[in-house]
Length: 481
Image (cartoon, rainbow, N blue to C red; front, side):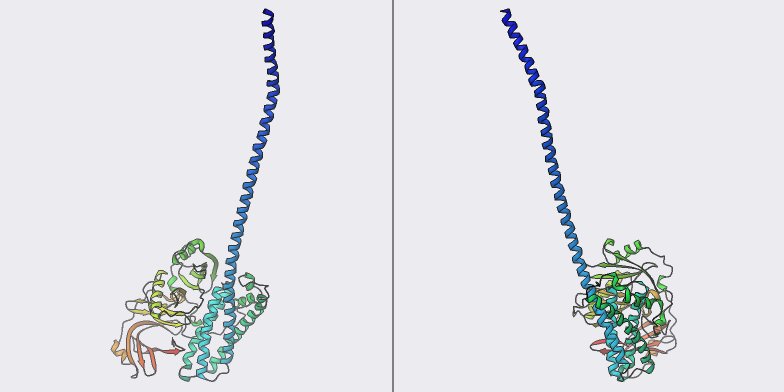
């Protein structure tokens, strides 16, 4: 019995030891092996998941990059189309101006000269719009735009000499011949670039367009190698008005790029991040220049004075889609816009239309006196009343606090100085530009006669007839001469 128990006891001990050996050492090894394999599987799954996530991320990233690339490509194509249209309009308008200037030199008909001068004026405006859209920079580009504006206004001024069949003088033709030589050089420079553009060697929106022959031409306008004739006339871009102080900016502090960005964003109700800074230009008015793309994908350019951040000019590329909104509605809209842009007490003094654009002239009014030297020009679309352009250079140069001279004669006394054929329809007081840099305090008489409409200006201090403007109907557009 005892032996049996001992045997069984030994057996149990043996069995226990055997289990401990097989289930302890062998089992522990197998467990470790299974755990290692499990960890490998988990690690493999994790790696696969990470790789899949990475691939998904790369795919998404590539997708986003492709989308952004396509968006940029689409935007670039859109801008290229805008630049191309502006570039070809510039070529067309400059070629037409060169042709008209050449014809004027041999024309002897006053009526034909008037027709060509009027076309010259219109094409100068188109060329100026095109240059603004092309974002021509630098002193040379600014001087070129100034020349184009001068040419247009000079042509406008000369039409006064061709009213009722009057012809241009020999001196007028000599000046026009000098202008023709400048326009011819400009046209030739554009032609040199045109072939490269047509062959795909240059893109209009590429900065390289303004290098080479075209850039050289801009440089010539800046360095004086192109001799520009001196133009003295009653126009907003007259050389006779240069080298003046900017009275409206006196006492103002200089602004930096960021301050200008904030001012521009507020003026046009956009986010500052939408603006592109185009640099500082130092011409007769130092400006900081910006541009942005509006909600319709149209590029808008603007200039702010470095002193004080006043809006000097603004131009929105115009599609010229026509429109028939009444001039009075456009004038009302212009007055609203100009107030939002920081100019107060402005009143429409003249509005006329041409090819879907209403040109509105506004002047400040103080104590009932119109301040014509401070004139601001505004362009409004007759299709949807969009603001297309602002030119506030005259305002920057001339606007200041004024004291008015004592009147030496009444309205009735001044009216008695008018020609008996004139019928007075309205009268108001006005400060008007006089010669190159002076001013006169006058009575403005709006008159009609059998010959048409006249504005006659009589000096309030001595009764002298200071100026007469005649309203000319040119192809349905009323012009003040």
